[in-house]
Amino acid sequence: MQRDLGSFPLPPGIRVKMISSGFQSAEDLSGVRATELSKELGISKEEALEVLQIVRQEGSGEESQLSVKLPSARTYTALELLEQEHAQGSIITFCSALDEILGGGVPIGKIVEVCGAPGIGKTQLSIQLVVDAQIPECFGGLDGESVYIDTEGSFIVDRVMDVAAAAVHHCHLIAQSGQDEVQREAARAFSVSGILSRIYYFRCHDYVELLAQAHLLADFLVAHPKVRIVVIDSIAFPFRHNLDDLSRRTRLLNGLAQQLISMANDHSVAVVLTNQMTTRFGQVHSSLVPALGESWGHAATIRLILRWEGKLRFASLYKSPSQKEATVPYQITSLGFRDIQSSQPVSTSLNNGDNPRKRPRNDDDDDDGQ
Figure 1: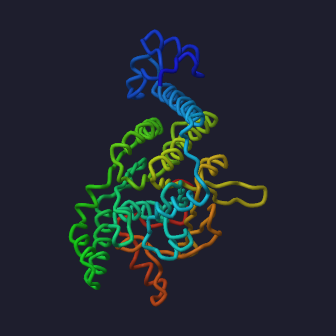
Figure 2: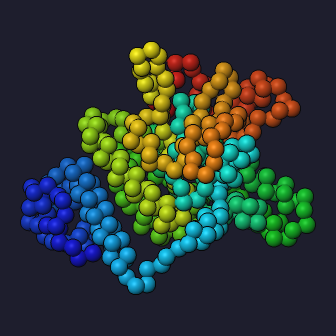
Figure 3: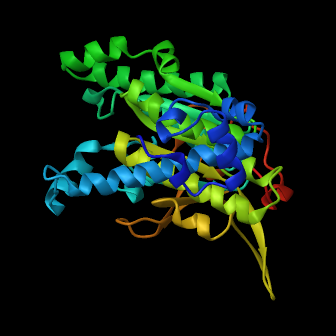
């Protein structure tokens, strides 16, 4: 990318500093991190990150325009796109009711936003998905790898081990009940330690680190082509703390959304984002709505809202391009994210299924936060 930096829509002061420091073209910024650029130019990390985003987005747009003019540019039919979508598959949740309303599970190549109040199970679903993405293909899985970006410190390895052990046990039972030698061989190789070794964990403490990680993620996915899911838990937390400029927040979020959409399409990964709920006050009554505003609501392809009704948990498919709106019950058990068993009393099922590693739900948790 040889485009001169003077042609990018950068602040004049920063443009002068870049040229003075020897940065002449977009290629000179290849591989440069925000912290390095910040020190080199004597600007804040936020400004450095915004510079890298502008250069990357403008450069990608330019390359896309050039590729359209090439004679070899590929044209796809609608049928081919449909076949590609079906071939990519989905990640099951181990809750058959939720998988059904999603059309088979969490689809690859899409942005899925999971919203809900604290303690409702957003992190539990995220952990379930990074484990389930690794189920061998002969058991209906994707045999992939997973990326987990944690912005709240809610990733608990002991809980991941519980969910992984349940998935391994499930596959072993299937293999033992049949005569398929391929399944038996796959079950022997499918282990808890193997699952843990294929979950790549990143801890981001603020929105600057999150944006920087998103900036580097495309190269990471090129180096790890088996990754089939990227989880950001949560997308809201870093942007709702230490960032009071709403217009700046909206701009950064829009840039991040475009990066994630491109990443999902280009690398065939499911991108799962957890989001907090906030209270919207009306003239007559108030209601809980997903955080980050209405403009952010357009970023996700699919939006799930998890909520309480008394002591029951429900998942509502609020937005989907291919599935109708629907609501199903679910529960969090020691094994992970599961259906509610109709043969068991609801109260007993839920009490026994509460995760001992999650704090109990309080009524005042429904105000805000994760």
